[in-house]
Image (cartoon, rainbow, N blue to C red; front, side, top):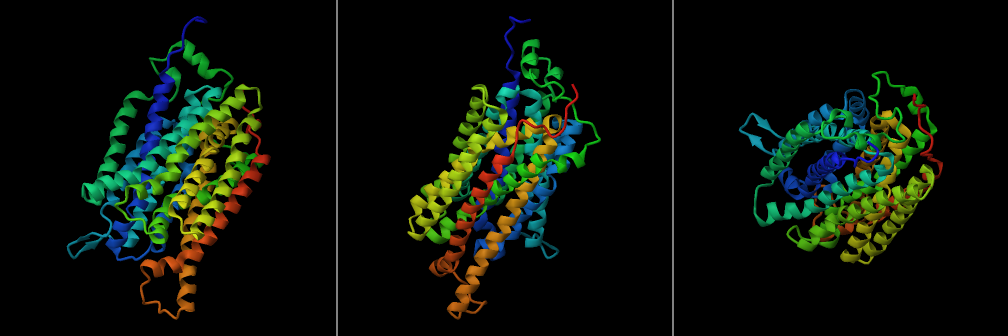
Length: 467
């Protein structure tokens, strides 16, 4: 058996979850790219009026991270992932009904849209905790960072390409945006059929895995791949200093990042007059996610490389994460300068490199969840992602409120009544101070995130595993 070459079934599993990661961001990024069409359906004038619909996703995503992570740890990722992907795919398709009236008896109003976005978020909440659990079961310790980096690379590539897909389907081919949402939902259902046929919860259950690959996967993971018991030691998990700082760090990491997903299309349109049919504009909007894909890959490779060079897990995870946070904060300050100069290209480049630097941290961050969570990896990653997406919820609402505050001040200074709509250059001028304030806030929060990495120790598991 010692001379037997390991099979590579684990990479097939990695490919499956990477494709799922792409689907999550296809469905997630579709909504902000449909802002113009959805705003027109409800008669809205600017993105700040959409804040609660965008934030509803973040809130649900945050609240249901732990329950869906718990299901994955206790019952296994296979059943859990199939159920939640079908769930969120259905609500992706239903989003295409926003603003429609069905005779005189029913109208898909804005309140209904908020509810659908919340229900969509419940489904997507379980994706990454259960992907993490699946990778924890299927990959050796020395491939964790690379695998997590590749998962997030896949997500960012698709998120970055979504503005281009939206431009092709909706603007160039003139396919109804409602049909496009239905098509995106159908992709997730098709993935479930393939996943159900191929995936097993652990290598021992898969007939194509040979003994050499099993030995490789299980090396240095005594007890880690066992299914978690239904009785979860919640008190010990939440009392852990490591857990508290990990969650606080991820709050900071998500705080600025959700601007790229939710508000970047609007700022490019309102402040720089980028048209919806502009190919370069679509690249501007997808830039943080496209460059972020490279950041995920490089960061994941780097954290594993440091580990192979003999660095401790703590410093192998910490090094790319600290660099990424600091560099990301500086990029937001650079974006502020180019916003003031009204330079669309260099503003977009600065935001794109902020996405790159943010995502340098992703492989290390999610690998740390496996390092310290072990058999409770899905719950640990779910808890971290919950707090991170509470940061996304807070910033989505707060950014909208700051823009509203900026518009209110403009109305007061220029004696403009509330009933008067602000459009075009007047809207851009009114919201300009709000965008300035937000960019400064994002840069400072990333510096706090960098500092928190110095008190996160990937060498200390939250619970002592049984041998």
